[in-house]
Image (tube, rainbow, N blue to C red):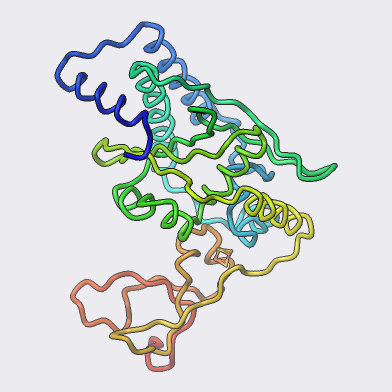
Length: 288
Ligand code: SF4
């Protein structure tokens, strides 16, 4: 276990599974209020999903994506109909998780809105989730894949951090003057949870990066952060170029790469080849 509170949480969950736990009316009420607030935010209309501004939750994203969000938001792929339900699941998980912390006897400070002042006229705001033992923690709900691979450790998270979670946590820590703790991660598929400490996080380096991002957004010139990558099949290059994995979740990938096509791997002989995003195809693979 990576955090002293994990033991208390597991003990509480074991008691709950055996029908031996209790939950105070106060905690039940607070979880209910948090979920009600989330319902209002997610389904209440008039939310600011499309209004661009730098926030802790987006400041760690690649600057090319931020350029699109600021200048050509209409070119984004439509959000899937599952989007809001997924956001709701995240909010419910966070609300319940905090209730569990409380009932397990873990002392924590609740969420708070903080502002990171970068210079006289630039700041980034956001609301952190919890503070335990003087360290800021974020609560994340994750798919089974993400729970296992991306949140395996701080290093694996940092290596594929397309959503900018590391910058987000560093921003909260700097803005609040507290230590950076880590991430409480809940597996949406089966209810497992764990703590991933941000061991070795360099707050000053992350904040410098946030500052650079803010400067680039202000300059407002578009430059891709990732190049296309040669496709390989059985260790050999096929001559085709594919999207960098960092672009895989980008909602602007079709606007960014004119001619992009997503199709089953063209060199594969498998019955159900995996889907690949091709930036360009070599002559022999062109249709017709
Ligand atoms: S597709 Fe890739 S390079 Fe283009 S905006 Fe998105 S993340 Fe940046």
